[in-house]
Image 1 (cartoon, rainbow, N blue to C red):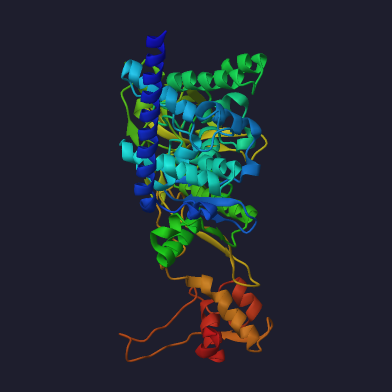
Image 2 (cartoon, rainbow, N blue to C red):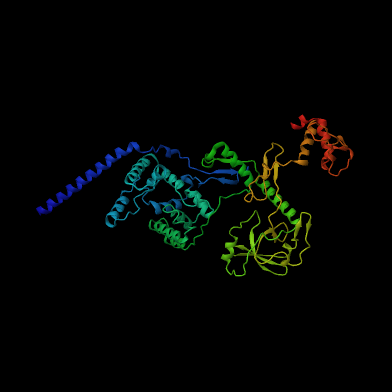
Length: 549
């Protein structure tokens, strides 16, 4: 009995002294490291890196510029189920511990002693906030102690809800997305409130290993991680057995979604980006600027359609220039092989690329990729007279084989202007164009299209082409004339005029396009018929200085 008492005393004092030295060591370490710890005051007003966003006048998204995709959300905007999923996946005792989960640390320490393996489990959400905002990811004991001390400090200065808000907006979620708002949009094209249970659990499983558990690049591993999160949610009574079972049966539906662009105005967006970069440098892409332009959503869509339709119509009148490339597909029996041939040939505007896989008398079959095939009938083929020159085309084709061959790389276009939409053989126009609309009241740009397809050519023909305006300048001359006192009924003589100047090589004798002269002409008629000589005489009559105003 005495021996047992003695052993108990020895054990007690051993534990006491060991504990004392541990506490003393931790305290000394704290006082040594504390002055070097960064201030957590900045967490009270965090400015996240948010991309530059460009909007139309009616607040529809035109473009987004920036390396990091982030949609900051307040805690009140986070669905309860989303919060529960992250707690289940990362830190189920978050609302119980003071920033450091001592139980988790003890479990990790015991695991290390018993197996020699370092297991995660001691790192809380608050500790991750400390690491993500202030520390590096180096795995050292000093860094871990800094993380613990910072977490304790953060918990004394911020509410649990604020800490969760910071965490869920900061964490990297793969595919250039940061925070749950961006992750929901990138993987599912939805807001966080639109996610179902399976999708929520999938996103909650990403922070541990956003590359390894990525549902796009490794669906099988991501599915395993998602089901683990669902299991944790069921264990913690966040979801029922039935909800768990239903969610685990859901397939992996994640895919990469671009920013939810609502208005197609890339040339206008590039003008904004260039101006913002000139003003703010690289900060333009990270400081969360939102630029609201004068672009009108409805008119911009009409401008896009008008320019493309006009260029297509002009190009078609000049004939078919033939396939852009030809592939030998005689030995191809798998769609995947055709997909490989198409992978470097993306759509140009509304013209997807395809490979001709069958040619009948008056129809062709075109493979458009990813298993999709389409038939182009004679209505979509009969226009394709062979291009010979700008003014000459070959005879009208009589059968499809005169136009294309099996293996030809072609473009197609859906024609939807008629009652019965149909698919037409198409080609990228060889001619370019531009269109700009200006509000007459204040000069604001309400639509702007700088070319057929921005992604094929970023050259903006509205602002960069520097072409002579030609007769397009005449309305400005006539407007100035009306301000100067002329009326639409004013008469100007449509007669020859000669300019002699020492700076010219010879006398300049301008003419009308027709080469004829029409005598006294009213302004309204001269403008509608674009008479050159009337415009020149009118300009001389009112004076260049007034016209330039």
